[in-house]
Length: 268
Image: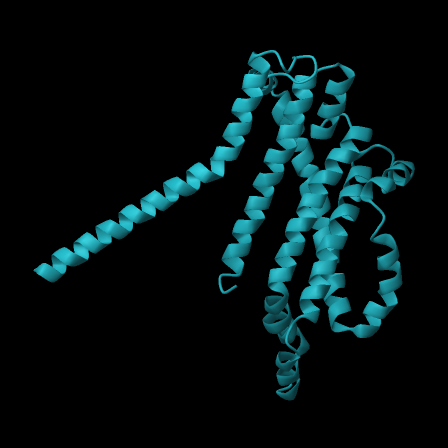
């Protein structure tokens, strides 16, 4: 009887400590953004910040509700997200295939190394003039810029991940004459998966940055277009709203990939 009571009390204590840790973590996580928001609102209320340069949080919230009410806000967000997913998907497929090939075949890596090292330092924004000349201002040019921006982080991390696999596993697989496709599926991909997921996260973040830059130059909808249109109309409230949307949507996408990473790499 005493043992049951002690076990019950221990479970209750552990449960209570767990709840306290969650509350403390929640408070720490949100304390900084809430503090910045309060400081921003306070400076606006005391006249330190002016609406024509740095609108108050209330003004930004009001503008966001107005744009959400007529559907404009969601139209811009969905247009940008759709472009990112399309360009990122193309980049991920190419980068994974080429990264695995370069990691497995030294001659292929040597053959592609000079060109990739030459192209990698070129910022994706520098490709925008050529993209417009080649594809016009339609969707293809934006997808191209996004794919360029997302390709190299994924490729480099995939190649690095394969090169960091313990050679003993590959030697053992060759001794037992394991087929190459099984080596790729059961040794190469699982061994490189942590680096691969890091590359996907970096590639997705780069793709989101690139789509905003591309839309700011040549687009009729999207978050980047919303920013430039607000600037031309002298609407700093919508400019700030667009900047906040870039951060929020980017964080949501990164969190999604991070959750996928935790599911795929539970052993890491």
